Length: 311
Image (cartoon, rainbow, N blue to C red):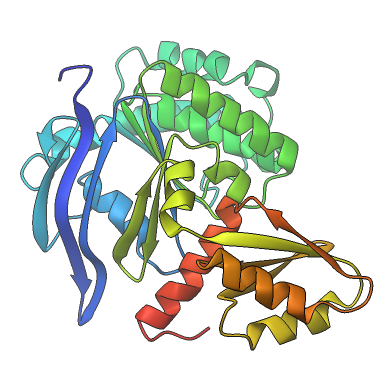
C-alpha cells in the first residue's frame, strides 16, 4: 500500500444486534501514522465502530478497506496485521512478564519466537521486569506488558480500548509518549478514551453518540465546529449561580470546572448579557477560550436530547 494512502477508509458502516442499531452509517478515513481518538458516552458504539473498521466484526451494511484489504472479504488478512489491546488486563498473573509474552508468541505461531519476545521486552523497556510475576506489577507496568504483547507480531495498526483506565497520571503520560514513538514509525493507532488530556494528544478525533458519528477532525476543528463562546466565572456561591444560569435560555451549558464555572452558548453577546446579569456580589466573569472538554460535554448533552435519551 502506498505510504500516503489511507490505512482505514470506510463508508456507511452499520451494525445491529437484534433490534438495536449499535453503529449507524459511520464513515471515516485514517492515514498511516495517525493516532485517532474515539470519544463518546458509554454504550455509544465506539468499540464496535473500531472493530468494524478493522475486520474484527462484520458490518450488516457498508464498505471499506483496512490496510488495503476489504473489511468484508479479507478480514483474516487484516487480523494478522492488527494488534488489539482491551481495557481489562487479561494475562496470567502467576507467570512472569517473559513467560506471558512467550506464551502469547506461541499462540500467534510466530517464527523466531524467542527473538520476538526479547525485542518486545527491549522495545517497551521491560528488561528490569522480565522475570517479575505479572500479578505483582503495578497498573502502569501491566499496561506496558499488554502493549508489548500487541507488538509481538509487529502490527501495522493498533486498536486500544480505553487502555489507560485506572492507571496513574505518570504512567498514562509515559504510555502516550510510547504511542507517539510508534506513530512516528508509521504505525496507526485507534484509541477510545474518556480523558480529555489524552484526546488532545491524538492527531484526530471522532465523536460518536448512540451509533452515529457526530464530528471528526483535529481537536481544534471540532472545537471551532461547534461555534461555542464561553465565559468563566470565579467567586463564591457558584452552585447557586450554576442553577440560575441553567434556567436561562440564553445559556446553553453551565458546568463546574474546579473553582470556576464555565457557561457556554453559540450567541456570545446573549451569553455575556446572561452571565453578567446573573452575577452576585464578589463574583467576576471573563471570556474564556472554549476547550475540548467544554465541547465534549456540550455534544454529549446535545446528543442525549437529539436521540431522546436522558441520563
